[in-house]
Length: 157
Image 1 (cartoon, rainbow, N blue to C red):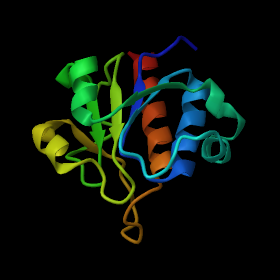
Image 2 (image 1 turned 45 degrees about the vertical axis):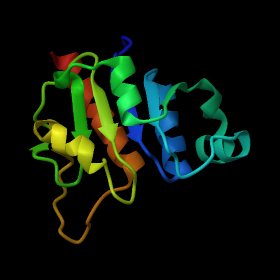
Image 3 (image 1 turned 30 degrees about the vertical axis):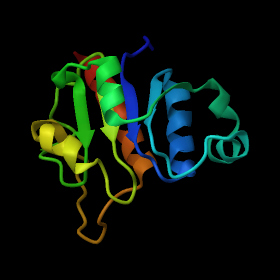
Image 4 (image 1 turned 120 degrees about the vertical axis):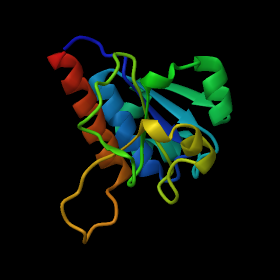
């Protein structure tokens, strides 16, 4: 599989096990994980080992103090940003994912901050669910589904 320019961005993640599981997916797919502070946990060795098991040491990790620091440093084109929320305007099946896509996910309790969403409403997506019995899916499951969909689309393009 050719190396992808896709990146996963977690904005203010709260649960270390979700971040660890997403880190493992990033290692498996050889993609970058970008974390934006503040975190709801510590990245110290003990916490990370429990959350990311033995794979954390191989994560291509970048950290930013805030969303604005991330934007200032990376300067991603608007069409490379894909924000995922349970009420996103479009299905995650719809976009033609850019080769250097930033797949952005918010914290588990409240999602992506409103200030970020307000500026990028047209770049919001959701993972469809058939049953109304489930309000939302686990963050690590959604991130994994999304990254595979984005990479699948790129392979088919």
